[in-house]
Image (cartoon, rainbow, N blue to C red; front, side, top):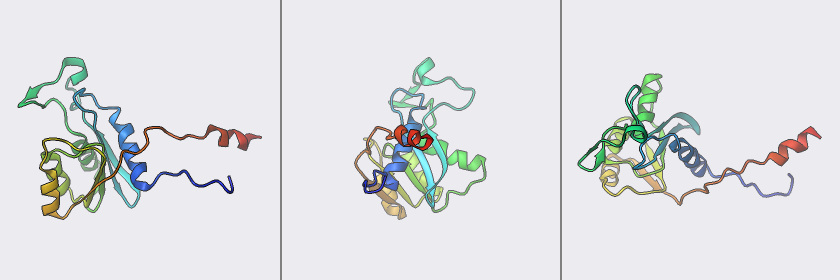
Length: 162
């Protein structure tokens, strides 16, 4: 592959694409969201919005709405933070890559978890996250949505076998 320019995604695009893939596991049809917690370019945990273990999923029994918010699911950011907690992984100083702007409660949880920056490509309408992040010194970075295709080069593998 000499002379061919690199098509590798930036780290931000890479981790947001991972978050997009994670969001495919979401079980609430109102919004599929994915979150990836990263430190030193290593994934600590992933999370998507879905019901707690043993509880029915929105896609099976419908959303459970209170004040126009589905309370059946745990949000992606909380699931990622809780995965770290269950496995004894510190989130202090980590970055959060989230497909959507965190809601106000998730923004507060990310701040309390020691997240230093948040990278998103899509906003959420009812959130005070901007304000909370700014007041807490958490950097919020909005970037364009990364490409939604996976560029897997099967031809490079087949040339190895020859």
